Length: 155
Image 1 (cartoon, rainbow, N blue to C red):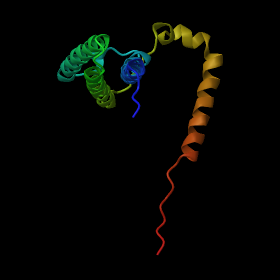
Image 2: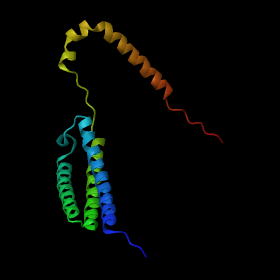
Image 3: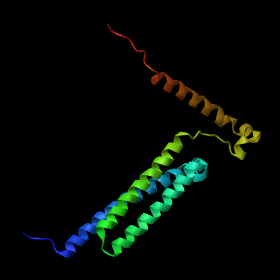
């Protein structure tokens, strides 16, 4: 029976651990990128209790990542992969917490100061009126195309 050399076993264990770390960081990156994309701050999205839970999860997540890196430097890959998979659970929980909070957000449309002034509307009425007409037409066409079909019961 042939066994793998130490160097091959170590490289395969390290690659497995790095793959897990990559998956964890992708979840965290997607979560934070989603906030940045919509120009949101964590305090604005989460209620106090949820924010507290998120911060606690983040601290535990950070501890688990640090512990996994420490164990990896000691070549204790079995325990390091345990901490990394546990960190994956925390990352998924934080993502889910933000996802649930995002369902309760309501959109707000704000006009910039330059557009809100009446001078802007007077100066640009030759452009604005046709644009409003085109948007209205496209809206009516979209409503006609996507209108719900009536359900006919066949006996």
